[in-house]
Image 1 (cartoon, rainbow, N blue to C red):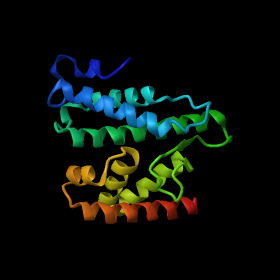
Image 2: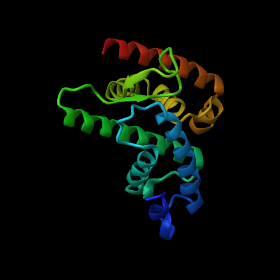
Image 3: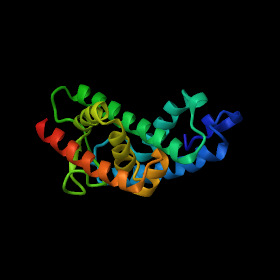
Amino acid sequence: MSGPEDGAAGGDAPGDDGLWHRAYDVLRRLAALSMRGERKDHTLDPTALVNEAFVRLSSIRNRMPSDEPAFLALASHKMRQVLVDHARRDKTKKRGESWARITLHEGVLITPRRHLDIIALDEAMESLAAHHPRTAQVVELRFFMGMTEIEVASVLEVSRQTVERQWAFGKAWLARELKRG
């Protein structure tokens, strides 16, 4: 499988077929950047990550946003779900060995290449979303998607200053939550 062709065929793509292809290329580049510092034995590569996200997106294609930023935001969320599910399966297989780790490139916690436990990060993100849903959206778009503050502001229809404040708050929230764990 080399891309979103299956989901985009026959007019069942959101808006137009080109949206799937443009989004696939963007997500593939971002996934490659996010995963370039991964441990050598990681069994999920960037192409597999994006393909799995697109498979999950195809199951909800009738409710797909038609604009590219919103579509990318949804795809980003699906990629996060894929990473978490993969880490949980990996943890189950290892039965007590160290948890699967992923390197995230946006520097949410002090150092830019710090290794994080993706399951702990997902739990912290869920907690953030429960208490501060908009901040969780900002963090997901900035951290997992690699969007700029201006792009996030456009997707969420808020000011850049709001994104800056919520990004700073979200990073502090996650740092505190991950220290507890």
